[in-house]
Image (cartoon, rainbow, N blue to C red; front, side):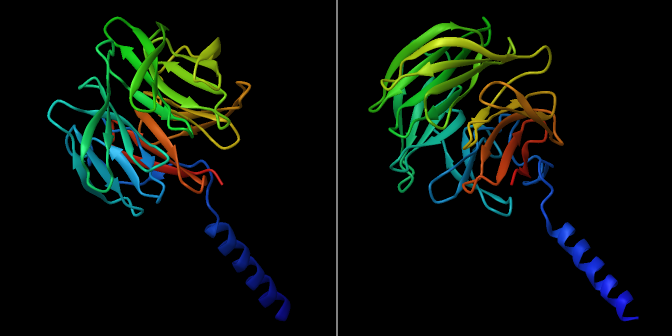
Length: 286
């Protein structure tokens, strides 16, 4: 009798432990559907762990997304501006790639005042941005009609420097953890390129990282180990590549139009924006 009781208790403990463990790389709902427009993307966390996402309820807005997945309006952009991407500098200021206004905007998080940080008449439409530890921005700049694109560096103070215009439809852009590699993808051409990045912010040694035959490409991020997570827009999945370009994992989402992603501050979870569901999903990676 005691042996049966012991086995029963042990089995219950084992089942309880298994149920309490996270299921890694399995996407689940984070927000409700249809809270955002079909331009939802650009998720990012500030240094206090607050999550912000663009185009809440209508284009030209920024939402604060709470840990339980509920959302509230954080701010509305000036008429004619629509954000695609969010980054934060070392002082906590928010930067927005404003594709419809052809700007990079800067937001004072305390006053919510919005200013034009950078405008250049040669911009097509700044689409995605990443930022170094020294607050230098890099922006992808596609021309969708002509299937071409540019890459810009935006130095501290807002000066734009054209790094190259010899690109396809540039979209996702991100830095390796050591900031020595800049990754840029091309949505229409379905290619991801890698560039060496020097201490002054110039790019060299353009090389093909990987390419695809189907689907699209949108946002990308590197984890702390340098593995590259890239959204496969239209296919409902995120691919994980090693720094050497080896495919490590395919992660499937419920929605198909995966537009962007961000790691949680503790690097244990990934939050994904989905344009067809007009909301967010998340999955655990640790």
